[in-house]
Image (cartoon, rainbow, N blue to C red; front, side):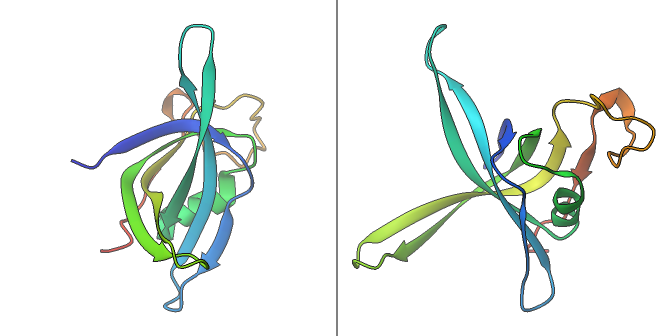
Length: 129
């Protein structure tokens, strides 16, 4: 089973693109803390890709520094770099996006949608359906 869940902070605003077929894609990087011991931790950076409705949700609501949760499938692609060396790249293809910090500071005029429990969720469509 290929199912990953990451909770972390956006390192930058989502980058929005359209495919040649007119499908919206959002790409962003998530900084995720990894506990090495009680005193030490490290940070890993994961590339995330959201399609269609999930991409629209990310474009509208996700901002640099926000703490978010992303659930999806890890995908691998291989390519050859400029020096002719074969490389692999890993990207999490998002299926669900959520706010992980709740609605702190979100007043009545906030653009964050009102949801139960202080979390917003968008379960988007797979890019391959």
